[in-house]
Length: 525
Image 1 (cartoon, rainbow, N blue to C red):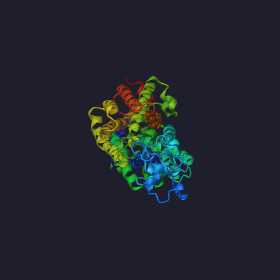
Image 2: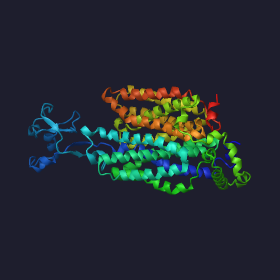
Image 3: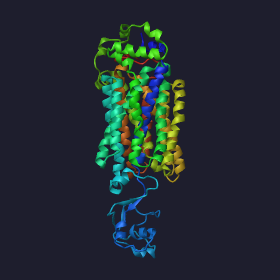
Image 4: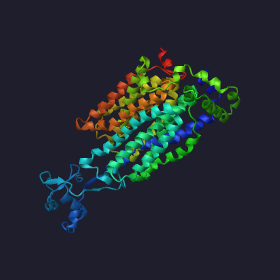
């Protein structure tokens, strides 16, 4: 007996499965909000040196605000006040003589900074003066978070294969919410950075566990639909982030706002079932029969499961050796598993680096921050609806390869578009983002179908680790423009094109049963 046959008999996409998908949707909604949160909470508003101390000394007398800036702070090429420098002493002669200020003595800001609060009430930069020499700490916030995500993927991937999907999902919900809310009330940057690391470490379990749980409970023909629904949660979260950030402009309350859906998820967790596949493979036949009976009742197919005794489910477990505990080392012990791990890991790393290289750089296009984020998120909706059609029409491999190839080409085109043509660069970047997020959505489903049940969570944990490594490196790739202005774009373009070549080497999984054991993988051609 194959598990897919049993699922089909009790309705592989009935009300029971739809309940699981809906609950997972709520949890996954908050993930892109946290992943892209630094675009807003770490934003650096316009700023200049604080000159209020000079006013306190009575130096300025009756000068207007513009005149005070003129005599105190050198102007940049565009005429705006310098962000990090001030004159060593007021230059009153500039009020009557608009000569060059390049030869006048300047010093670093002596008494902090004044910030433009017209866009943000408060950000990390304004809270702890993360500007000028400390500007790099803003990029570090994103990297620290994604390093946490990277290690969390391995942690939750391994433990959910050992202890089950459901209990580890609860751990991820509760701990992720606790660390995220705690970070919003940090009293220092170091405290915030540490809590942000653990936020990333814990919420990543929501992604990999819910993805696998959804796939393991639906039949073959509805897998791609579930994949698209999962990815639509990401698109909705990414789009909604711009609206939430527009309404909540204080970084502390914005963090709390995007975390709040996890409270509802924690309550709804009681209705989430354990994976029957995982229970059968691990020899927990009675528990598996309980959840299958529950599924059949909800789907109005109770008569089917009444004819199946718990002992009959044991034949789904192919070999006795599969009752042993598996680890990440099993990804490397056999030749075809090694090849699969190498190829999927490379794709996850490359697609994550390229996608977030665009997503975390929205301020560089010179357009409204909220509008750009909204467009970036909005483009994902039609892309992921088209994925639903393409996965069935042309298959997983061609969809994945095509998305990476076209995304890489868009990144290549942007190398040659002049930087002052903001609209053109943004349009090309949005198209590239669309192709790459389509590839990202595909590889999640693709990987779930390629790995056997006994190693599926380990495989997703390993791949997610490499994917988050790519995401963690993306902010650092953007800093390469200090070496050569085109180097970040060339790097992102290259990794996308390399990933497209690797994706073409993977086998097609459209319409195939999920592999259950390592022998299923090693026995395939």
